[in-house]
Image (tube, rainbow over all chains, first blue to last red; front, top):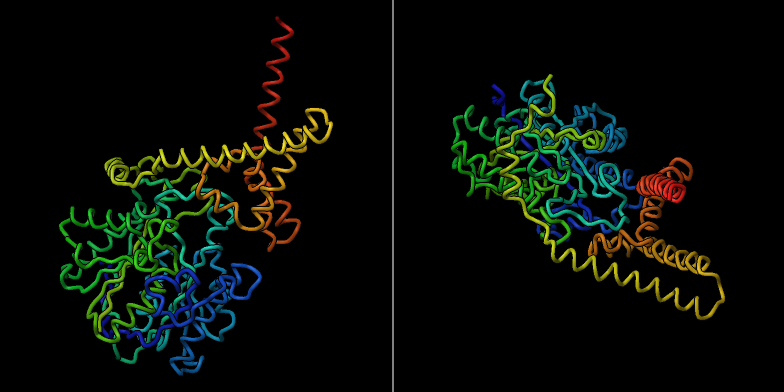
Length: 328
Length: 153
């Protein structure tokens, strides 16, 4: 069994988000807590800016919950940079435990499921789960310099500049995490580093179908099935693959990457990055769950497990997806 | 441990290829043609001005024209304009010498945060480096062929 059922149903009590300038102009702009007008956030480098965004998101989340830092048992956080420095540099300011996670863009769901397990087991009372990403720092690490005059291929996605943090607690309030499905690494041999959607979609389909098989639920039982950052093209593949396996999710499916921007020419397939699912979940989806406009959702964040070295050595891109089921 | 080839799922890859959105080639070619052509006309324009106003030998004229074009490419990169031209024109703005200037200046700007030695100086040629290496290597090769040809004939 890869699905974990939580008996004590850990609740999500507070969220906080920080969004970059382009994201703030997007279709979910009004749901973000902090909207930046400067993508360097007053810092000298993009890496420092990303770390500060994550710090602000976590700090606001703690302040809004009116809990003292001593009540927070641990912060579980991840991002896309080498050795997850955005997370470690942000969390060094907090006097509490830290667990660093990396599953590329699936890190947010990974941190949620680890946090929920800690609380469900009674080991911790309050846990913060957070992730961040920054377009410019990711671009620096994985692709070309920003000012280089190159064209973006039509399958390219745009890394989200943003950070989202949410606090899990054993306080028995709504919304709560009911179960989560741990993902499996799936590799179908996609080698194009610009085509992340196609690399991640098989992993997403595998996790969702495993989730349905192990829980006995059907697509209709969910109000929304939210994928992390497959983009328009990856979403289409996901729906096709699941249809082949006998699950029709056409009506329930939305993609965070598709939601986040008013898709124009330069983003092509939509947003991606570790901050994509956390930004959408901690703002828009949390708001709808809190207001009970959504009853039950399945958040499936997908990640492409490549590095700039592995793709240069001609390796294929393995994908992973973790699913978290949230109810109110 | 399985190797990469054992993971390849050809059914899936063919399916992905069949549904993937394609680049509009005619549009890309037209854009590259007119922007690239415009940059070349600009170079020719400077050449004619120099030829008419200064009495310089032809190879010196070529050097001055290159210098002006490199300056323009670097200047537009610094202003953040060249990447927009590049996004529109593709190969049209990469192939001329202004594109070469852009490929040197853009990493130099980008890696300034890592310092002047390990940042700017060492990253400056990450994109232009291969062009220089294979440019020099192929010119040596062509030179050798040329030399041997005239030795024999």
